[in-house]
Image (tube, rainbow, N blue to C red; front, side, top):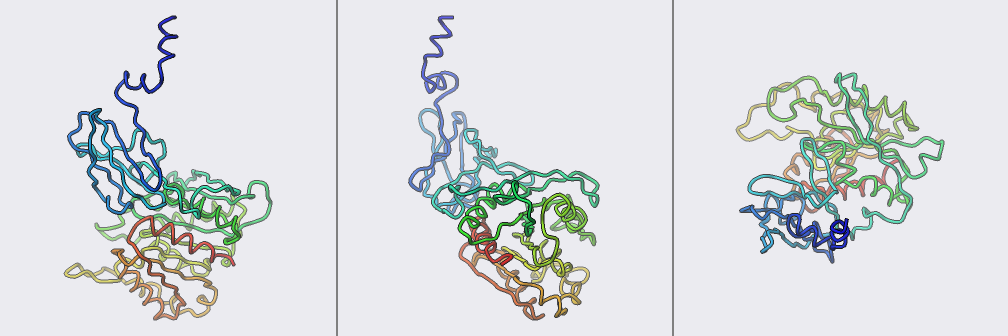
Length: 372
């Protein structure tokens, strides 16, 4: 008994050192700097990987101290970022950081650098985010989506407009709420009176269907799931308005292409369309690449593209792409194609590339324009 009491009296840090090395704090955020650390005394090389943090990409060398702790300190602009460590060519999440963000096939550690008030956690009324499991009759399997309901939804009785927000390739339905900060961005906009309270639906964009490369399928599994299951589920389980003027759809990268693949054929159902860092995939022929098989997007949807009546009900058609984005020319060609058919398209060319830094900004700019 005396031995147990004696052990409990030892400071926690000392106990941690006796059990397996020094106490490690990671990430440590202070004054615009972030220090990443991992205890790996037997490792020969450790790198930080963080595609959205400028200057990091797939590898920022870390240094090891005498206790076997690897670390690197960086200046990082306010925002929210995914990262992991590469320990002797093995990717691992930060074992000292409980904050994570899911993607389609893996998990990332998540760090926030405060200073961007519009997406920081503020002392304002907050909505709720729910992870919803539903059965997809189109795909014959269970699926998941995330749904944001605005402050006051739980206590109220009225109906709200609905905004369908799609993620990019490699990500999942968790991404827009974790690294994307969608709920907090809307909480802050609503509190400032800059955005209407709305329900945001963030479905899973991957279905198992080959998206890029491989044989081209005439079936769009995601569009089937979206129209046959996601929208009906939301309209039967949530208090949302089920008319065109109160529906919006937007997406980034792959989700931007999916937005067009759904929004244009169903233009009579959406009054607001947003395309972030994307466009019609394949609209620019690849040099020395295979010719596109089948009709083009423009040929497939000619009747809708030339329907003047449908255009009148489209209140916002918005594109945003960074000047360093590899899909910039695809976005420009897509915008030009729609303008050729008489669409009133807004195109915002921002700084930066194909990263969450831009996608946070695009949501913050796009959402206040909805349902006004």
